[in-house]
Length: 105
Image (cartoon, rainbow, N blue to C red; front, side):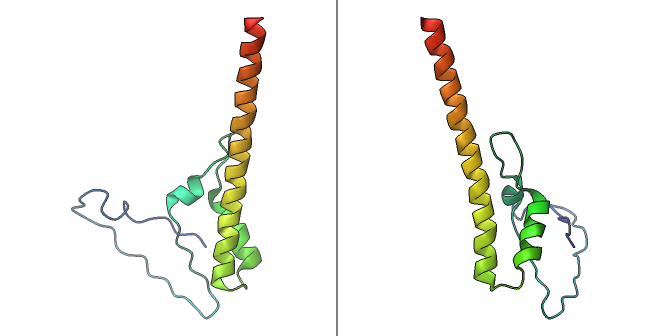
């Protein structure tokens, strides 16, 4: 069950008032995943973000694995998205170069 942040990132700005902390009752076998928003917001060339849904799917599918393996799978998912973004950039660059070459003829 995802929980939304209750405040701005620590140290981002002075806060005069804070919301009450969220209390969680964790049971044996429960998993608490803390990720920065940069992880969720990572995107490919089309702008598709990694998102909470992907994180939830990976945790649901691999939550029984050791923590190091679960973390590796989360990062692997981010790297795949980054590779799609890089492939999109290469495609865009080649298309621009082809247009320039046609104009130069």
